[in-house]
Image 1: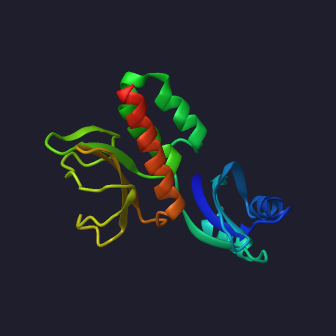
Image 2: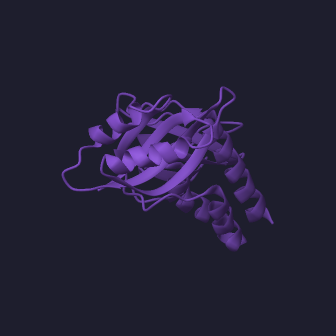
Image 3: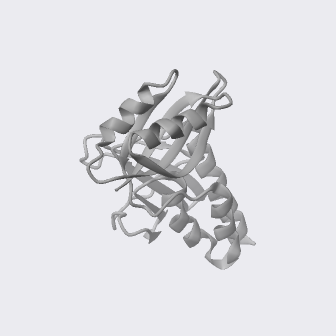
Length: 203
């Protein structure tokens, strides 16, 4: 069963190896790792895509991680979005067909940011393009730069949102159900990718 683990660990040589060994001993098989953020305090935040054997509880993975000095599991959840997509791969997808850059942006965002869905929303025309799980009736939001969004969707705050401006009439919105919180670095990356896609689309 696939899980996504977001973990904070010391940014020192050998730290990632110790984490991988602990996960393996607890019954987890690592499929991919991405460094999400390196911090000034000497820690790093990594996303770990792993497969857990039948009968192995996610709690045992978390306990094994917490047994390591300086390691903290920020979030763990089942994950079925089809693997991790690195920013460079996302850029390649967006630049492959300039005329389709904005649609391709929406399609690569779930894998790039580990979100449940993404959508491109027009000021007057509503949702222009979206991934499968996105609501059909999203409203345009007035933003100048990439930011976390406050959306009253009846979920009691369980769904987290972020958005970025494509131009004066379009934005892209992404959502995560249950977490983790969008980091400042993720919001900035979302803004950069949206800006790049908009530039490519304009030619």
